[in-house]
Length: 359
Image (tube, helix red, strand yellow):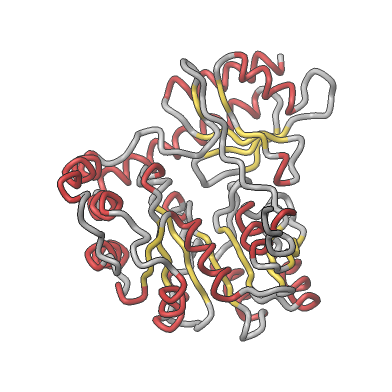
């Protein structure tokens, strides 16, 4: 007989990643870097094969130092994990208990809900305005529900929208002192606007902010599962108490060190992304579709409810043409699809296919 799990565990719907692409199809469902990864990172990964029999450095000192140098921050305030997803799980493990409250925006990243449910906490979603986090709504919900943790993806997946620095500060200052604000900046490297603040600059100002980052997006290391967080040393000390002692592998460490130092690859990735986000946005709007303005490596496309033109029908049409995109119904967006930026010809194929679909 299998023992019953803790209450609430069986209520969890496991996170479903983007569908794998069948042979010959194009996968545009997981926001992966279409340029691959840094050649230096790939070379370091290959060379790490000679070290696979050795346990990794449990404190990943060299990797933290490389991140600190690249970001201009203190390595002692960094903790690394198997993707930023693991960091989010560690945060829940360290601070959430039964009947605590987690607050997110309406279309927040699905993992936040999983983190809450795994700890027996309750999830509250504040309504968004124009598919953008509404700080006033967040503060109103916080005053009513008194959250233990607020998760804010900035920029946000799946909408691609972001919150300016002044609003982040207003949110932090409007929360209770014993509430932890987690700023998930997985897509932060794609934003160049001077009003954008990933949160890195706020850690010195506030005790209760954690910023999470990832190597999966702009660095193209999604397959290695590597992420990190930045916070006050006391906060990092708590996270180190709940993480596994060897949670980052040797190949991930070696590739990560090279990836974060390869500014040329990062620049090429940003330029490619900006060019094709603009291309898809303009072409899909020209085809009669609504596209939420995006600063990320994907676009959120909205479809009418007209029979023959719905999101479900568009998804089937694209799949038949070998183009795999993301159904975002689990986010509460049944009339939309999220389309990752691909290579040049792949982006053109998507634009042409949807123009054909809408025509």
